[in-house]
Image (cartoon, rainbow, N blue to C red):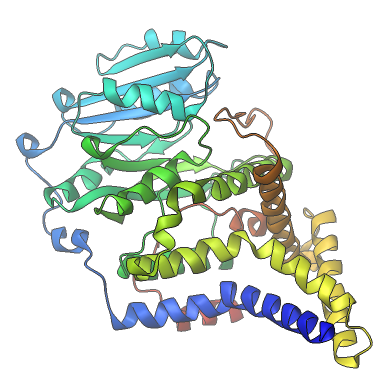
Length: 427
């Protein structure tokens, strides 16, 4: 009886991994082709330039922690936004008075920019909770201190709020290589964009990206002070409130990628901890009554978060079944995969001949980070404070590594199909 249970565990784990990364994309593509969800921004295609007197009052809220090296560049970017000055205010919440960030903001010559200085560092969630009530705008636009917004992005975001059912709109984030300044693009990146496009058609947008999203102020409710993934929690709460969450890739901003593999691993691990942490608040969205949203949440998020557990089960179960020649072959296959991953991680900046090892390496590193995030969630106490990435000394990361940074992105090409994706992977 025991060997049968072990075999079931092995094949179930393999099947769940395969479904998460291959089966779900196929299913969500087929479903999105059959039924396009109500997507309000498609009805506004010809209404892109609203009259200034019809635009809503907007407050941009940015939580900043030790950002003296980038804050002036950020303020210069905000000053160039194409939005009526009398309807725009910018609140910079400085989390702790630990460097010159607050002084630089307060001395900046722009009446729209206001500093909210917090002497004690408490974390981003607490900063947002205190800044939003201070905002005068009916629409809150959240962003980051190292983000560069397109001048038109605010107009592109807020025009959707003409429709009452829309509670939140997320824009497109473009990640740029720190050394070359070029957009990061690759197979896995297109894979994620493809999934987002399909989920958007189904009305199953999973969270937002903290770099650029807009929210009706009346829908903001304080988040727990220990929240790690504030953007994911705030975005998903829109679904719980019965309002629509949509993407618009015409509203875009850019950010530089993490400068080192270690920094990206730490970021990924913290996001993993925050992902598991968010389940306490968002578990209701896993209920089948939410339809496509629940389907996407289970498939794209929850199963992916637990993929490290499935990988461990597959390996351990395989080791217990070696008396069967079939499982000797599967163990050899697993061994070759992890060996190539080890080579890919060891020589992450190696030559082109090691490229075929990088994707397994990045896949394993991503899941190691998630596993560490799960460990921290289970056995350590979380808090809302964060350590900013030091971007003074930059090292170029391979494109393949950047592709596995699981950020909330917008489809670049709304007409991408699964066939085109498969073709691009072969080429």
